Image 1 (cartoon, rainbow, N blue to C red):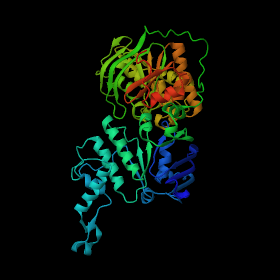
Image 2 (image 1 turned 180 degrees about the vertical axis):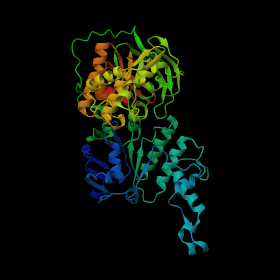
Image 3 (image 1 turned 90 degrees about the vertical axis):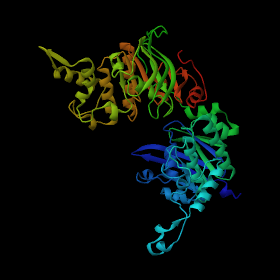
Image 4 (image 1 turned 135 degrees about the vertical axis):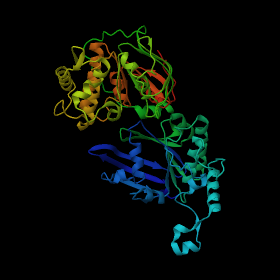
Amino acid sequence: MPAEQEYVLKMEHISKEYSGNRVLKDVSLHIRPGEIHALMGENGAGKSTLMNILFGMPVIHTTGGFEGTVEVAGEPAKIDTPLKAMELGIGMVHQEFMLIPGFTVTENIKVGREISHPNLVSRLAGRSMETLDLDAMARDAKKALDTIGLAIGENALVRGLPVGYMQFIEIAREIDKRGIRLLVFDEPTAVLTESEADRLLEAMRTISAQGIAIIFITHRLDEVMAVADSLTVLRDGEFVARREVKETSAVEIAELMIGRKVEKLVEADGEDTRDLSDENIAVSLRDYHVDMPGEQVKGVDLDIRQGEIFGIGGLAGQGKLGIPNGIMGLYDTTGEVKIAGKPVDLGKLGEALRNKVAFVSEDRRGVGLLLEESIEENIVFSALEVNNDFTKKIGFFRLYDSKKAKAYAQEMVERLDIRCTGIRQHAGRLSGGNQQKVCLARALALNPEILFVSEPTRGIDIGAKKLVLEYLTKLNREQGMTVIVVSSELVELRSICDRIAIVSDGKINGILAPDASDADFGLAMSGTRKGGKAHG
């Protein structure tokens, strides 16, 4: 093979920034023809941005483009539209299916590339009126299906087919494209059963054996070890390492993905005098399931001690967000939930709130805030509704105590450093970080004994992050509040938590000490390590 053709794809020194924030910094990616190359990294590592550049997505070119070079099959390539990527033989199998349910398998595979021949009408009215050559299309579809080993009739309707079949039809559609050189699989097994996932990995081997390269985006280390030839690890937008799979191990890959200096973002003041005993359990879950789309919980057993800061971590879509959302009654749950030893019926709306549990949602705009109302109204709203706080009794009536509400809102604005023009400013006009602080202030107005905080520092700067985390630690130390932090930011969890549960595929895959090794965290997050006691 000529030297310049050694790689089907070379992306070199790629950098990209959005609004002054560098999300990729000098990243390189090299893919050989016919190899399965795993692209790995935590959420936010830069994988999606790198693929958006490869596919010439508008989000890249409408925000100033990128730095670096791209070569396809040894030739410089300017990929400024998805169509250009397709012309160069680059295809993608999406996690969300792009199929048309009312079409047959053949029609879905050939959509946009139909085979037709002229007729009398088309000679007068143009190509759009040509007759479809259904037999030729069916032959192409069957060939593509046979290539990946899917035994299904090419004329079957897509509607009603199992999820696994839909994934394979997506792949067949890409395979059918002429001159396909490189296929990107984006978390392809995330929605598949174990047996479907095994079949998919086998299909990937079949495809690569024909000289088609595959970029395999996944966080599942066992799949990488089983099927990939090589891998690239990204971390915080930077290239970390390229490895041949046969020369590495799951432990090393996990360390590469997670490994970073764990800085103590927060230092707790004074001596820790808390009694975190197994005798006093704040939250107990047994066979706990939550039907939250995209964040399903599939049978969790967990004990959270009274007075501890407990972390719940894991990759996106693995179920960590489902745990607090279920407890707050926002989604259907099954199993046993006890708060301070007392069984709680989550079928009753507001049951958790009545049991002194408060929640700061990850969806601050959708669930957390009344965007058209003032900061003051947002802060006191829940306490007013649930506990009749911020009211005064006059005769038989309870009236809004605006003096008390104003004073409390003003106190929280100062304490949490909420940057605003005043407590009458609409919450919808605040920055994301300040909206997050308003959500926290509202939860604290309930005087909870247990506080769930989901993604507390998402989208806020390092200074605001430190302030929020310090305040959570202060609440825990000074008021004895049990604080449960659900976060994708492992560094934050390791900085303030006493213990951290890692959720993978809807279940707890390990409960770790914050100073456990990077390898332990990486393996637990990738679904490989079954470590830690579920309620230890």
